[in-house]
Image (tube, rainbow, N blue to C red; front, side, top):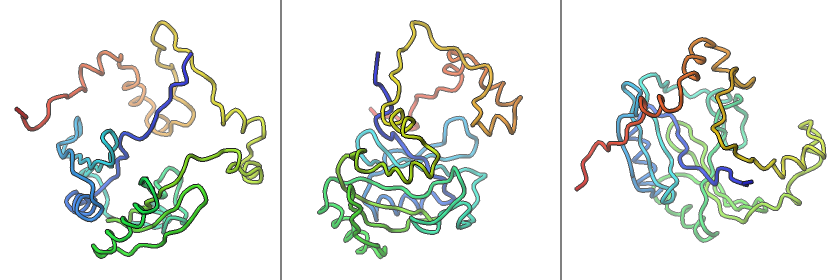
Amino acid sequence: MTHLHPRGVNHLALSTTDMKRQLDFWCNTVGLPLKALYWMHGVEGAIHGFVELAPDSYIAFVEHPGNDACVEFAVSHADGPGGGVRGGAMQHVALHVDDFEDVLEMRDRLRSNGVQVIGPIDHGFIQSIYFEGPEGLNLEICCGSAIDERAWIDPEVSERCGISEVEIECLKQPAVFERPASPVPQPTAPHPDNIRAARDPEGYAAVAAIPDDAMWAAASETTPPVRVD
């Protein structure tokens, strides 16, 4: 039996139409080191860039030939960290620092680079500042402690979401997964929430039917673009 689950974000990939502009902002203004910039594996004409948050956590960017530079508030982007946007879109990104002094230092670094910063604001379990990045990104930097679910799961909001008390308890303690001795086979049908499969059933089914070992062999690319002696 195991309680294994993802322990954090390896990389959050954001679309861009101007890789240089994003990297200049995130490296020179925010202060994150560039760690990777290369042709995106398996995607013709696309570029992938990574800046480091921590040794195994990154903000990434994808400059794809099909990316659209148009920002539509309430459609592609939320109009501020409290604004509405269509489902599945990013509302805002919050980056974590160690303590409140680090929040204030980031505020001052950003302002010294000409970026207007809103805050700080105390939200109880986190203390935050807010600012805008290139291409309409809604960004936050915060510090805080682990969330105490006993204090921060509001029964009124749970009811508003149609989640019962029993369901809340299940959500707070997800079922433990016991991995079987043999690999679990691919489901024969897509999950009901998979709207890409609904849009292109045959194409998605063909990709999903590729055996794991065949996908590994065909799609993997482990050679860095630059040789390091």
